Amino acid sequence: MMASSSSSFDFLAHNRAAWDKLAAQDCAWSRPVNADVIAAARAGQWAVQLTPGPLPHGWLDQPQGLRILCLASAGGQQAPVLAAAGAHVTVLDASEKQLGQDRHVATRDGLALDAIQGDMRDLSVFADGTFDVVFHPISNLYVPDVRPVWRECHRVLRRGGRLLSSFYNPIVFVGDRDPAYAEQGVIRPVHPLPYADTRDLDPTALQAKLARGEAVVFGHSLADQIGGQLEAGFLLAGFHEDHAPTPRFLIDRYVPTFLATYAVKP
Image (cartoon, rainbow, N blue to C red; front, side, top):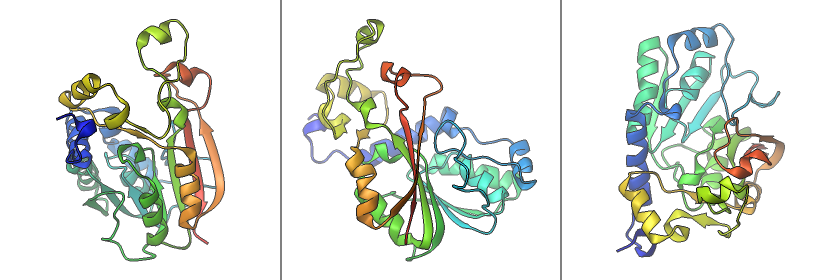
């Protein structure tokens, strides 16, 4: 039975396995920072990313003493850097091997951080008002509904806490990805939003993707990404656009396809 027509398809287990595989392959988002980066962070020279470029000024300038949840962002990068910069860090991710990268850096460099395996849509392991900051770089494309993510982020933040999140401009999910169109300089809209691999990919292409062990993705509308944050109770305090440094799709050459928001729990 095709995954697109099977209600029993476990996308979370599949994507967990896909990211375990990527971590083992040392992909860009699974490559732990080196000891020099941690030493620099301890000395006050640190950087973490929501998009390819630097964080906008004022979004997270002083992490010292803050209780930060790095949500669905394991891989030995943001969480250890923030811990070295003086924050009290917890990282939650679906992939145990991604979390292993954070634990590796913490052990190697003597950092204190908590690494917890879980689903970004269910933060019930944390009490209300546990965190000052939720740092959530691009990852909610791996779940079919982002509104539960925003509701849980709102719940676990204290009053005045901030949600720093990023996601793809949904326009990237609309076009036909046949390389022949890109070679012609043609952007051919074919997929309406919201997008889901499990529904919108050709069945043969979907089964090939699953067989390769690649993560299935979901393209969410701005109504879900930004409107969902507002519906959860957040106030939008900042918005940022960024371009792909190495365009993967033709559309990347024309519009900023990385979006980030700074939202506050009033």
